Image (cartoon, rainbow, N blue to C red; front, side, top):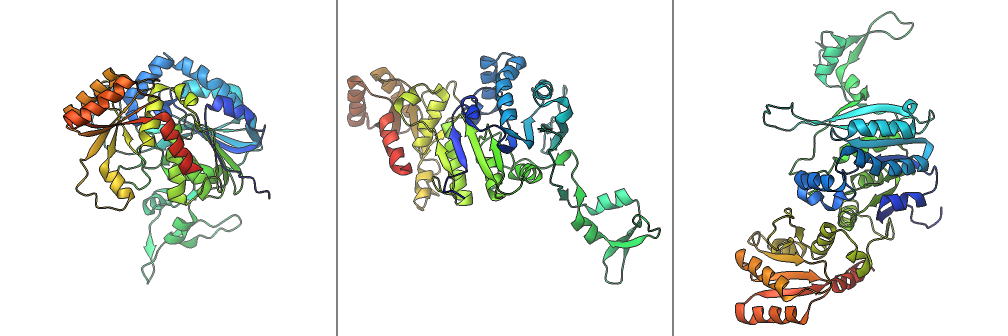
Length: 435
């Protein structure tokens, strides 16, 4: 085998990237697409922000399907004749998506409507039954697509309900039941429950699997993050070792982690540099993978010009995360604060004592303009005073002379330490880190 790196994380629009992938070269595709063209950069702000963004971009669900159509067709093109395709969605657009998938893949290649059923506490609602499931459409590329036969353990109660038989115990206390004899055998035979449980039952199309709890180690802060166990099941069922798994909306990288853990090759695509940063850190810390050795990172923004054309929310995310901060979840009415840099996080990275610093944070303001003027600095000073902060960071492409003079005055006269940082400075720092 050559020294070429086969695992790739690509930052960019999948509609531009998918056409560069060789026809019929992918074994498994899983996608959990957004309701808007770049939800992953807005995912930090949750469902309300996502809904607004959807309405702003599409207006209705058919516009969303129109946006997805060319992407679905490209994914169908690159899927092998033996390949599998999984489309993860929920009630918002599932019925419309199913019609489009039938058109592209063919109704005869529809295999399953998988129901991922999850349980969590919800309040009673006068108008709807509580929604507790997602839908995953499973399509084959052709009749040659096969599954790896997966099983899950029987529970004791399931065995009793299925067999409708009494359970006995031998002299050692081991439980057993009478099982019907196989073909050509009329006599029943004794079968121990622990053997039946270990052998397992074939999977059906309803998957009871919990969502990620707030205290789970795998949780990364993405509200739409899917459980690793869910993706492990899909990867195991529809691929083998060294085959290629692709996620064209890879978000925080759950599919990629599952593929890497199970010794598959993988390709991840995401529009968001913020998401790609999260994935890189995830692969490094959880799997000890090294970029440029175990996987290749492609097309991250490398110039100020690329960042000028980035959507505003994504640019804010890029800048805040680059400083090691946390983006503000409220993007409307944020009063001049786009993110927070917690001193506890800084000390934690240096293995210091951060227990007394949990409420110590520095505000971050980001402006996607060439020259930040004095009025912008004045508003940031007001925000700092309101939150009783004496130090803050201001990111922009450049600062006017008036802005720099006001920063100096605020420090000398008011004791406000405002640190101006240019985009070029961040890019130089990143280049030093990533090589």
